[in-house]
Image (cartoon, rainbow, N blue to C red; front, side):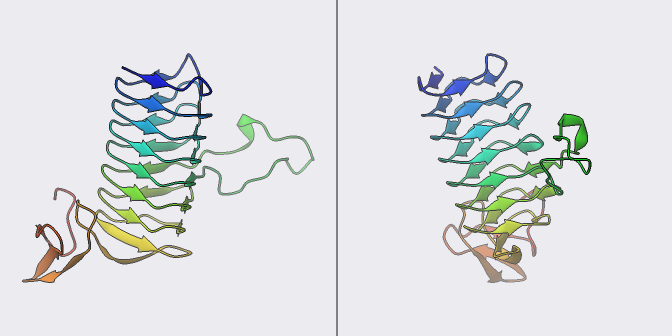
Length: 192
């Protein structure tokens, strides 16, 4: 069953997967595809043609603009913004209002299982690796590796995290999770 709150604005040209919930005052634009078992929180904006995978959680007040791709299992904390224009202007040099043909969409890809903390901002042209974690308030200006942990403005790599989200520590020539004990190569690889 798909649950859409009566105050949500969901385009009839959007595709919504089974078991997905869309909450108060969210807007889902035409051409957006939202997978199965997703949770779209209050006041979320999903722009036109944005693909979102299965079991994705997008918390309240997020903005997911055209050019973004969210794979399965992605988490966006409250107030996350995925931008799409490196050179934003409302007008052209001659003073005319910019239209769709007056700018280039910059893509953002957030890979399987990655998590983005509250109030983080991702600039266009970045890929966030599988199970990576972006700290709250970070401004991401470059790619983040698989299982990478980044914080700050601009975001910088400070370590690696397990698929369960806990830190990885050096152990026997590799990395081990402090919580579940999973062992990874140093640094973790794409197939782990």
